[in-house]
Length: 323
Image (cartoon, rainbow, N blue to C red; front, side, top):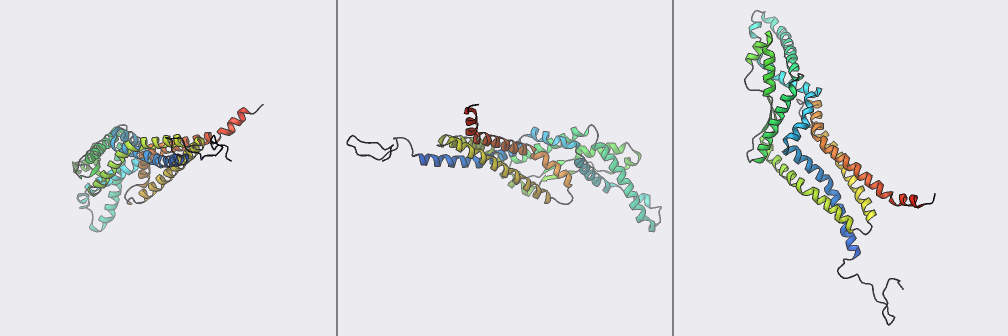
């Protein structure tokens, strides 16, 4: 006979019943487990949504992320190459080669072109490595991010570009201070170079992703926290539930870190050959650094909670044992 079964006055045993108003324990535990699983899955999505929303809507945050790149050697080299490639088509050697025999012109043209390119490269590098370049760099990116915000906030599918006109203007000023560079600076067009960040056909898809990220950043974090808290409250064995939740969150964030590394590699591999890979690596690291920091903090926090919860009984026994 079960010791917990109630006995009536006549000696007959009645079946045990759940107290009125309380759900069965099995159903409560199942609901708690489902909530913990949902909260665990929502955690990495929450981190990604919050990061995407901050990068796309907060201009100051974006500028602060890319500002250190002004002193990055790979980025500087990429800018020097891009600006120099934009200047060289405006160099004209026909007047100098008229007095040279026709048979000698190709070799002499290559020699002159190489020398002028080295000269222009040196002038551009002086601008890019100068003391005033960081302010120009942040101004260029602030303008580009504000243009991105305007594009996402409207229904106009205009492309988003990184306008390098301030950099080109500094280069023209640098060239005009040298005898050889005066003619080159005079021939350069008034409009500066630009880099297309977002093409017009890609704007609608990017805008849809932005709307999802903005909504997710507001909804997912509180939903994940509520699911985890409710799951722990409904669990019959809360220490065990805490161990499972902490371990699940740690694994989920570790998978997110692995997915970020995989996506980063594939995106960079898909870039055209004209894009500097070291500069693209630096950009990717700068933009995703807040997300990677948040992911590793979540992994560390989850592992710490898991270790403390798992070692709870052992710690209690050690403290209670006589010396």
